[in-house]
Image (cartoon, rainbow, N blue to C red; front, top):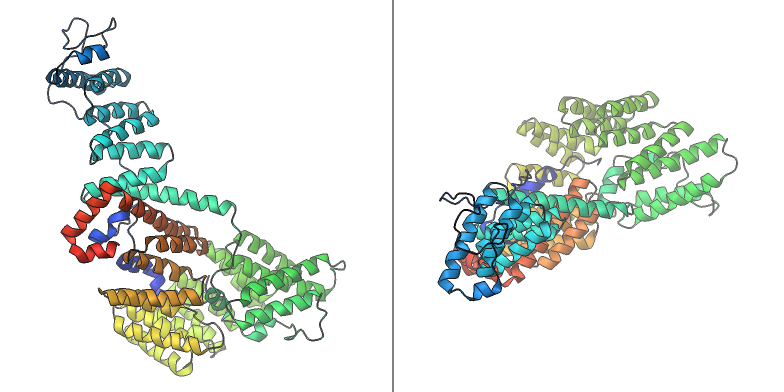
Length: 600
């Protein structure tokens, strides 16, 4: 849970992505019609049934005169010699009769029998419809390998045979060959002129399933890593240096370089640096401090318990930031058992709140306030929880208390302004932001979040001005504050301009952001979407995959992976000679040469 206000851009990330991003369901041809799909409903089963013949046929029997030879069981017997004896006209007529009789068996769900008739028809004529009908039997018989074999043959004979594309996609899905299934569904969508909602829903469902499997597989061997430095800086921003050192000396001078205290002081110093590389070093120092504490023989002294619990507290926070809440909870409970601190209860509350357990989080905040009833940060953090869960009245009460106890708590001012906005008191929100600007004129946070509110109101030019100011202020500071967030926000708005200059300008801003902070997931996923628009699909895929690895939540990882896999399908579609030509034809019809150029 961040110490910063909820980003309105984060709340509207899907809406922003829709203007600059790739549609998961339309994959390769998103840029033709500029549409975004969001449904993930269940897949239509596909057209797995043969069309019923309009003519009625009696079930074949030994007594019925057949137009083709049969064996002793009454099944068709079409040998090569027999086929060679027929004219082309006769072959067509007899093959059609075999197909119609096969349809009768299919209608009666005698699928194995129907296969014999379609097979005999194929022996006389290589007709894609015969292969399609036989594949429908194999679908019913759950022989998916043969479904793929027959539909593939049909598609060689008739490349735009969408019924076979859909049926083959079903077979691929059943066999767990999701990439192949998505290719066929995307092709069917293209041939359907993007007016095939059930197909697009199926595609999106399979894409989500496949992306989940990919993410789950990666998580099995996941090495926990810290998020972007600006997120960590945000987390600790509400605490002063005195609070962070919590009684420790602020210098390592005179400390034994092999002592736990030396490592712990070194860690806190790195946290206070608020740099892009310092947090990784801080994490390493914390682990070294823990190792020394755990190797200490005499664990009974109060000095040991105090130091060890503080090291556990910091380790808890870093593990929480690495998305390992179970380990974090175990560490904070151990810290509390050794030496209860108000901040430890606050951190425990954050873990509970992160997993939606507001009741237990509230109990932890109450325990923290029993130890430190006049601590501004406790009220602020509890207010943040209420804000995130839309309990705005409670949040407002806590932020006002935090502001009263510590008039220098800048985030309390920002949050109160955001609450006024969410309550649709726009004048009150504006007044609160202006008050915060006067009190904290060099703060990059205030213009950034004010800009986000302006953007949410549709005042884009004013919002861009605020993001530019925010970035300039951030650039002038020796420590990280909001990091590259203003650059990402500015780029998202610049990209809305329907010009190549706007698009290229947004890309330049985002490339600058990723250079400054290579761990910024939002910068990478936004840049990836813009790269798609200028035809840099391979670059986009790499960025989507990096964003997935950096993302904190499972949903965010799946979303980024979905974009990457949809982009890979796009590449395959473009390299397919038939579908590539179809895409070009559609682009020329809908957007002309300019749209064609955007596709690359």
